Length: 81
Image 1 (cartoon, rainbow, N blue to C red):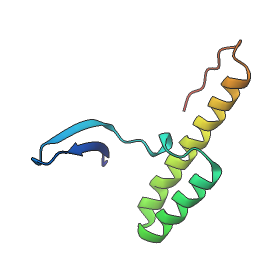
Image 2: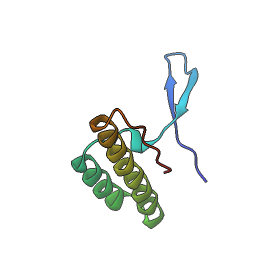
Image 3: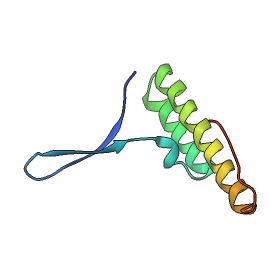
Image 4: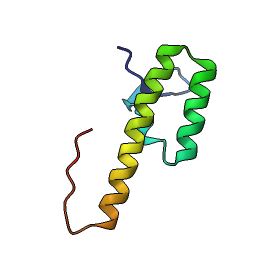
């Protein structure tokens, strides 16, 4: 399995590892998800698209949890993704 990470490369070509990259953290709207899946289907292979579907599903779940939690702050929400 390939692990994608965010990195910084400075002018001296020194690499700093920031954290694992999770596309679900960056897909905030349905339009973001649509565009991401469209691009994945155009440039990647079938395995890339399947991986993208997983990221989109996580993003949709995370968005749902965040909205649900904001609307009901008094009750803790437990979700397993």
